[in-house]
Length: 230
Image (cartoon, rainbow, N blue to C red; front, side, top):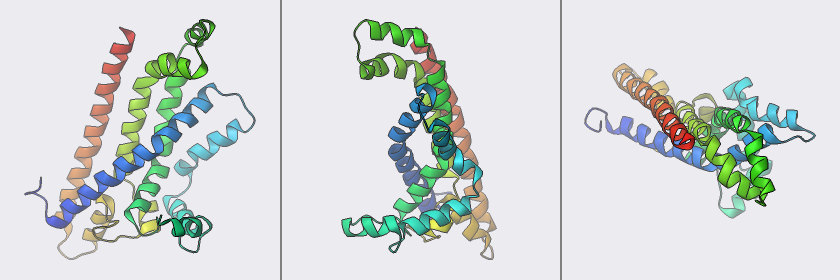
């Protein structure tokens, strides 16, 4: 791939992998909590939480990117608090990871929620009657049975993060080597005379990575499901 892609194209692919992996790793704990709360919880504001989780699917990505820019710029309410700590998101690769995590979050939570809802409550209740704490029930019963959905959600989120464009370019711009991921690199190459070939190569990489993520997600889900059933 390094011989087929040029230096700028390979740089965009490498940065996209870094951004996507960071986005999934950072959002996975919160995704698990939200999915578990929506699947098992009965509390005031549950529908509000459900709406907030799925809001990135409804809002135009540019709107999400603009809201992130307003919130995390140096003059923004969150950016001003984080700046003295040396934490910066605007126009940084970390901001691209934040935008990708937010846009991919609904796709992460949905399969996890369905997997948690499919866990038989009788099994959890049986473990609880044997003296297991809620945390132990979750770790030994709920999570293992829901693991295929957790894996599927994480991989789908990774694939979505790889393809994120609108929120990313609005929030962190299109800076080579810093925020230029594969989608923004494709956009940049299409604006250049003679850049169609480079854009086409990155399109092929995007399709291959997306299909690979889906196939790996399906394979892992089936393998984990068989192991759990056994």
